[in-house]
Length: 134
Image 1 (cartoon, rainbow, N blue to C red):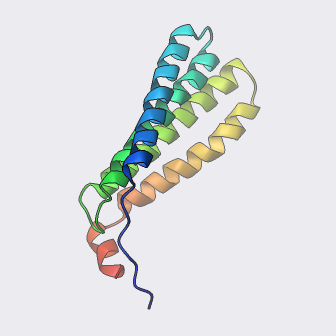
Image 2 (cartoon, one colour; image 1 turned 30 degrees about the horizontal axis):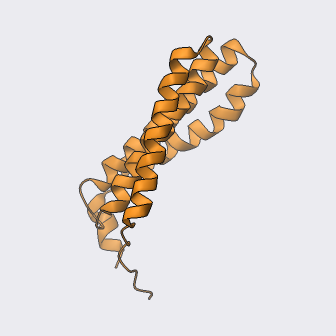
């Protein structure tokens, strides 16, 4: 059986780039949200905020990778999956109402997948997952 190594931490330069890009995305998103004229434009402008927050959460997790079976690994995964799924659902619904039905398909499928993945993470037993991995 292959022994898995621990997850390496990212370096200071990578962390600085991740924080910088995350903050830049959030700042751009806030500016775009303030300038949005339609609901559909607002939903797409909010994507910058969502992706910036996901980037910042990724940097936090990569600078201090959780150990297997860690109590905060599942909540972090759930937050990321639900943020992305929530944005996709809202944008799909607004797209169907304001634009056309195609947006419901283009963003509905990823939203369904992200919600399915979040449900699997929610139902997973952290003790069982830690026991199965070496």
